[in-house]
Amino acid sequence: MKDLVTGLLAGKVRPLAKAITVVENDRSGKRELLKEIYPRTGNAYLLGITGPPGAGKSTLTDKVISKLRQQGKTVGVIAVDPSSPFSGGAILGDRIRMQQHALDDGVFIRSMATRSHLGGLSKSAVDVMHLMDASGKDVIIIETVGVGQDEVDIVRIAKTTVVVMVPGLGDSVQIAKAGVMEIADVFAVNKADREGADKLFSEIRAMLDMIKDKDKPEIFRTVAVDDVGIDELVQGIFAHGDKVVETGLIQKKIAEKAESELRAYLLDSIMERSTTMTDYDEIVKRVADKQITPMDGVDEIFAGLGMTIKES
Amino acid sequence: MKDLVTGLLAGKVRPLAKAITVVENDRSGKRELLKEIYPRTGNAYLLGITGPPGAGKSTLTDKVISKLRQQGKTVGVIAVDPSSPFSGGAILGDRIRMQQHALDDGVFIRSMATRSHLGGLSKSAVDVMHLMDASGKDVIIIETVGVGQDEVDIVRIAKTTVVVMVPGLGDSVQIAKAGVMEIADVFAVNKADREGADKLFSEIRAMLDMIKDKDKPEIFRTVAVDDVGIDELVQGIFAHGDKVVETGLIQKKIAEKAESELRAYLLDSIMERSTTMTDYDEIVKRVADKQITPMDGVDEIFAGLGMTIKES
Image (tube, rainbow over all chains, first blue to last red; front, side, top):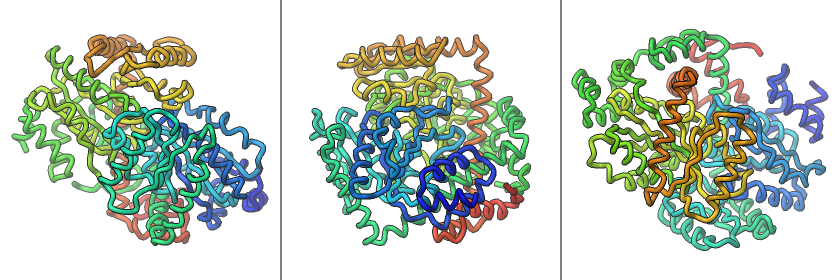
């Protein structure tokens, strides 16, 4: 364990990989390991990249990694992939696309399926993030698919969140529905050589004018496959990061990050306790049979965990 | 309260609206109300409609409602809209689109923003579903945007889940990433008059052939704006429902539904207790300051709630 921690903190690849395995498989020593490295976290630049399927996020992430490497920065990537909640497996697409970095010790990529029993950011993702952070990665990219709860958490964890949009996903009501206006720090209109890119750019701008007074996110045009616009995007990302520090917003971000992490652990832990320390399956069965309401079921679980029942 | 329950169970519109307000605003009597009506739930046909932004789900839902009304069925709609987790407000798009049903007492539509502190299906959504169910709605449509955790829960709640796809969202890896192969009971390729619809249809079919041996979801072509293919889709939905009953799969579905509901209440309740009955904000602050790890924070919360600390 001591060697593992020492190697990890020294930024070595194999101890990091081994530590991630320990954490993901819930092996013994996990808690001690995480506690040991925790004081060394908090230095990485956490960058969220999100957007709908088909927007080209993986390709864009790939190009962003290359730029960061050119600047001498080490990079961790966590691809949170909700694709297979039932099979539990992550699709290989991302890894295939990013395999040009496979031989680069300065890049560490991990795909993770989100767990099905938990919403939002999984505890595993937070753990892996902490390990990468402690191992000295300068930038950690958290890439997520879609427009759901996950993104809400990502934006609370990340210093800068890039929302990748692409022409052809529909009208402006649809953009608003995607819920990205509130979470984007920076926009990338990817596949900007396609028809409709200008229109999308204008729609995003118009929507931002409607809902934000100041500190409007910058919008960049990219064609990730051709490496077009990536330099400007990366500059825009760090410019946002500087602004966050200058305006003091960073304090709020740090508090939100802590709250998100705490919540991820809390929800995961309560599910774990409920399923292992109470008659969870039996309670589910009685709810299914309509013998008790879900609320009654929760009261039973709480009682089983030693909590008092609150009247309401 | 007695009048409210009686009116609701009789299927009257205003008591239903009032009950939803009681539940959503967490007014006193909420728990009693839900307990009172709970035995009368479980009769509605729960239909999930999901898919990426821009797929035309709202228009499709609108047309499906019309067909169901023609068949004499009453309909409840819960539009779970994750669009504005920060503002808390739901976009009006859906309501505007569906307002042709506004004067029809047989249709009750409710848009809800998902709550930001909880992943997955919110307790509110489950509550509203129960109210609509008890009020005698024949079909309850739960419409969600996106491809995240929400959908995993919807599919566990719904008898039949329709995934709406649309040409132009990218290649087959992207379809797989959207995670829809596992959750779809029925596919609708909407905007089927557009270029690329045939290709999308074939890709979905090919993907299904790869991952499923039998019980493959049917794929329908629709052009919702022109009311094309909706009859066939609705038939396909009920055919799936019949199959679920015939094969006995319905028992598994009922158990999954109960578990999802219990979990929604459990996670919501633990957050509520943690934030009101422990020094939650203080604990967050100490995590943010790195005085304690998130795991230590959870231990403190659990101790504050009367639970014993488990060694691990």
